Length: 208
Image 1 (cartoon, rainbow, N blue to C red):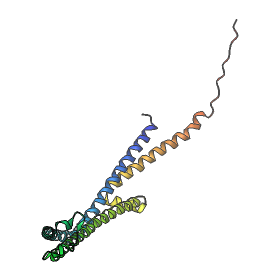
Image 2 (cartoon, one colour):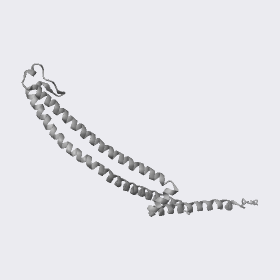
Image 3 (tube, rainbow, N blue to C red):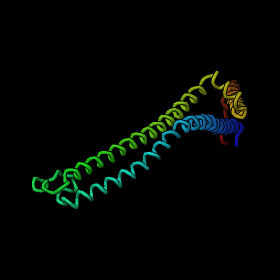
């Protein structure tokens, strides 16, 4: 390795070291923020999770009630229970004693079952929204942290929190300074190497 290429190689190595240290610092800080947010969000999630659990038990009971009402109505009017839903009894079927009561009971049970499922769906959507907002906050914090590291104040603050990052940055700057110094020295020597050099003259003696 030449004397000029060695500083360049050293500089590239220190740049890689600094960026690795910088990435580690960003992961460490953002993971800490994420953990704190998860604790906060977790406290908000607990009541919703408990509510969903209770609602799920209620939904199971209402489903059983709905199936029982559906079965009772189907026994009296099998043609009125279809894949598309419940149909009201026909005029002929209304002659069956208690058919209207069974139909209304099946309709009510179906509505109550759909109602509880809609509430559960809404509560689960709230959980998903909480998680999405938390991830968004962590991502925004990460972007803000990267922007801060591009400023002098942000770097100084990061160096105080993470001395290893500061040392990696200092090594990179030192390597850059050495590389620049050697380049400047080489550039200043080039004219001196060619100054005062005269072309060689060759005398050719006649052949006797």
